[in-house]
Length: 336
Length: 102
Length: 163
Image (tube, rainbow over all chains, first blue to last red; front, side):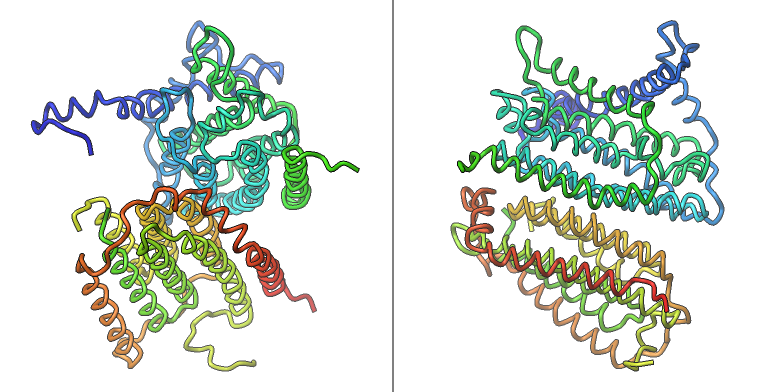
């Protein structure tokens, strides 16, 4: 592929200092995903606590407990892995780890700035959404492999929820594709230089936000891990490090979906003035993350039949209405 | 660019595995696996064939898009039939399902 | 067969297919079928059909594998032990498989089919969508009707009978 010096040591050094490897390993790749997932765990707990008139993590460091998640990480990493006897070991371990891999793959598609882009595929948006459709399979396998009632019920609920909300997710992002004329995420950002897509696509943006919160199984759509009912759902039997992987996968997905929302609706790294594009994309992503976390404190849990009914009828219908509105915005309203 | 005959070879091997599964397995769900394998072999073959002309035809990709959708529908209906058969017989061993009625 | 990426992907596809048909536990079979589908999607990408590859991942692995897993968990394995004697069906199947393997092996002669090297504007996404909507628009609408019929059929079949 590239010209590598034949000597193994200098070949390793040449690979490790190549820009692609640095992007994958450090930013916006693996290391930064790990740090951001830990920071998001803390942010989630802190904001939820403040909304509920509590204080949240405060002891681990003088800065409001920001190192709490790192302390949890170290604790969970050293815990003994107790896997249930009749559980299917292969899928039990594989499912959350693969969920983390999937989340990391999602981040690799997002253009955070014109320089720090890992992969610029022409079909960037469908690839992202196709990876999202892989996660119900993993959750079902995770819930089944624990060989216990509550995780299986949680896994099935999660499967119904995530599968049902996939179609509105695809259809609402179709409005953006119609307006930009391309699937490529970088070109979608550049097409927003005349105006962010959230203004003509307000309905689509709201539908996208609701369906992405449902895809991540966050509150108010947290029926698969309803604590008083089925004790963390499909994650109930997961010990130590695997629990960390399952939770971490959830927060990486939060980061990925918020980053996608800013890319296709809020203009990505476009922003005025002297501040670098990287700052703007991270700033907008942080706003979206905080918004989704605030939803956690604001709404009650959606019931299963409500959830399925709204996903399959109301949101689907609204997404199609959005496509119609976008069509008329592009072609021009018919003169009567 | 990999020579096209390798893609044909992979498609033929997948077809062979699919037909083997369809003819020798008892469980109805294995038959569904095998049918999906045959579908995939055919799709791969069509996409590989569309590269035979220079410049490549895009009709092959259109045909495969239709084929993937139809395969998914067929799997859904087939699995519904299997669930119904399970409800009636409590077993999905295909060697035992020899009568049309009862 | 000088491309190592192709060899790895093709090997994963074929091994996944064999394990899907031969694995004792149906859930392992469904998961290896998923790996096989992923391999086929990667082969599509190698043939410059990127949108079809994404479609394959989203539909096959995202929907069909989930359906199969769900049915497997609902129905369970076939009861009773496997027959030990070599039946006529197995013989026939073995002959058929060796035929196909023979075809496959003989096709692996690299000069048999010269393929187009450049894809350029023909594999462009725009050309694909134009062909799909302009030349095959009617067929697309008929496909949607078939989808509706399939959904109604599957729902009717799987509905619990309340007499």
